[in-house]
Length: 551
Ligand code: GLA
Image 1 (tube, rainbow, N blue to C red):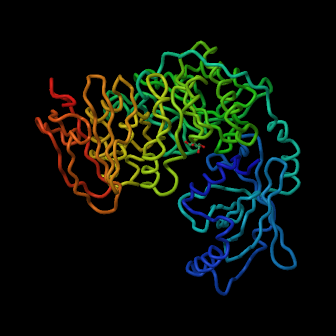
Image 2 (tube, rainbow, N blue to C red; image 1 turned 90 degrees about the vertical axis):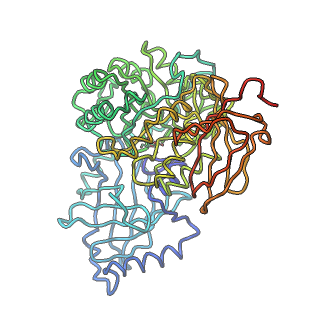
C-alpha cells in the first residue's frame, strides 16, 4: 500500500515528479544539502524556530477546491506535534500512519523526512503568511507549485473525517474475469493523435479550459492535421453518490454539454480513470464500478478512455491479475455500446505489449511519465524502451507517452528528434502543451504532414533500430507504399559526422531519397553523408528504384 494514492511505482514516480532522488542511501548528503539550502535562503542560522506554528493537524486539500477535500474519498493529513526534544509527526492515509522525522525548523519552514515502507523522502512544508495553510514540497527544493496544499484542521474534526472515510474495503481485491481475447473494436487503425490536459493543467483542468483548448485545436490547424482526441486526464472526478454513480467535481458542471461542445468542433472526447479505488492524483477511481462507469462514459458520449493503474497496483499484482483487471474495463467498454478507444496506462509493466490488445486496448504505455524528471533523458529513454514492436500494429499501439513538445523543456533540435522518434515508433502522438499560445516553430514541427505520415502510415509497422555506432543510431520503418523511413539520430553531446552506404545497410544500391524535415528531394543516391548536431536527427524517405532493390 502506498501514500499519496500511489503504489511502489508511484512512489518512485513521485521522486521523478520533483526531479529529485532522496533515496534512503543518500540521507547524509541530502541532509547536509538541506542545511546549506536552508541557510542560503536566509532562514537557517540562527534558526528563529517557531515550531509551534506547525504543531497541529493539516488536512491535504485540492488546490482548486480547498473547501471540498479528499476528492478520492480518502483523507490525507500531516500531523505535527512538539516534543521535549523538538518535533514529531506522522502522515496519515488510508488508516495508516507513516513516520515523519529529522525535523529542521526555520522561520516559516519545516523540513523533515517521511518514511513510507522502504521509501524515504525529504519534504519541505512552508507556512502561508496567514498561517492556516501549508505548501508541502517533496524533495529538497521548492520547485514550482507544491504538490500538496494542506489546511489546518481541528484534531476532532480530522478524527471524524477519518472515521467516516470508507478506506479499508476500498482496497479489497475484487473478482476478475478469466483471461480471454477480446475481439477488436475496429478503432485506432492508425496511432491516435490528440491533446491531453495533464502536462499543462494537472489537477487544475476545468470545463472552461477544455473549451479553449477545443477551440485552439481547430484554429491552429491541429485538428485538420489529425489531432482529434481531446482528453481530460486526472482531476475531473468528484464523488460517488449512494447509488454508486460517479459525479464530476465542481470544475465540470455539465460534462454532457462539454462533450457536445467538443464534438461540435469535429473533435473526439476523452476521459481518464483508474482500475484502482484512487487515481494517481488522489481522485476517485473505477474500482468495483467498471460497468457503471463505462455506461455513464458512453452516455456522456466519450470516445476515448485513458485507464491508469495507480492505486490498483497496491491491490493486484503480476501480469495475470493486471491483464484481467484491464480486460474487465475492456469488456465493460465493449458492452457500453459506444466505440471507445481504450488507452492502457501502466508504464510498460507486466509485459503489457504482449497482452494489451487482447485485453481490449488500442494503445498501452511503454514507460514512465515523460513529463517528469530530466526532459531529454525522458525522451531518450524511449530509444531503448520501445515496447515489443511485434505486438503493435493497426488497432493496438505501443504508446511512448505524451509529448514534451512546446513545453519549453527541449531545444528545437531535441523537439525535432522527439517528433521523429515517436513517428518512427508509430506511437500515438498526444500533445500536452498550451496550444493556445504556441510558437510558429512548435506548430510547424507538430503539423509537418510528411513526418506525421510516417507515424500514421497505414501499414502500421513500428520502426526499429538498424544500427548503433557510438551515439549515432539508424532506425528504419517500412511503409505501405513500399518505401522506407530512415532516421539518423545523434544521441550524443557532440555533433556527429556520419556517412551511410545504403548497400551496406542492405537497403539497395540506388535509392530515391527525400529529406522530410527539410522538404527537399535528394534525387537518386547510393549513400548519404551529413553532420548532425547534438541530439539532432535527419529523417529520410527512401524508395528503391525499380530493378535496383537489393542489388
Ligand atoms: C500518472 C500517469 C500520467 C497522468 C497522471 C495523473 O502519473 O502516468 O500520465 O495521467 O498519473 O495523475
